[in-house]
Image (cartoon, rainbow, N blue to C red):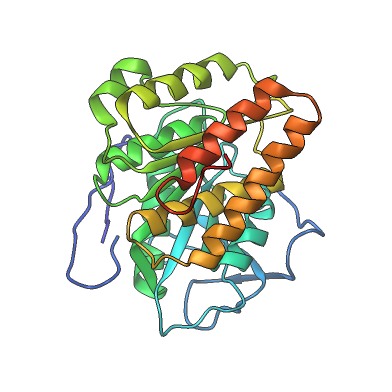
Length: 310
């Protein structure tokens, strides 16, 4: 388990055990979310599945608050992958709104903090992560091989700091609108072929657009497994469709890395859908974007299915 953070943004401390598990908000309820439960809870065996539990107080640290979603198929007789959602302004329900549909469909737990921040000291983020990690380890059957961090802007950078502190324990990152915390030098020192996989997103009007382009090229050079997509928009969380694609990609990489048994019909179906999206862009006449999509599809599915069409 991961326990304890020393004062002033000290690193997360990991203690790996033999057990399978280790390691006021601005948002308001949104009608697009699953049924809400507005009572205050703790993470325990009584939590309902298939609905967003909006208000949870951490058992590990009572100053910490989060929202939680358990897929409707949730049971305690198996282990589940988990998405840790880190909004840079502590708006827990905003990323949860975007990721809840795919968490339901693919079977992921999603937990989102009201205490994560950007543009300041890292200590609040370490405290939030420690509380969430401790709570889910003690109360939920989490797959310790499939912990995923989902961040935007400063919390996307922070996600890489967590992977450095918990080396080998984070399977993947969905990072929106930012690269790494220390630029190219940090990346060269801390990212390699064995690093967590990355699904990155960037709006075409985002001031960090060129930063993500350069990051993409550097990751190509290193050989790190990654997929970075652009969308029409500014500095923001990706739309729900792209958020869905990000978790689908994490699922695909889990199968590639042996973290989950390969499901060939699902792989072939996903390949066909992603190839069709590239072909649609191609037929609309946007050749540069289509070419990039074809390259991504080929790289993502090579070795998992026949990619000759891509």
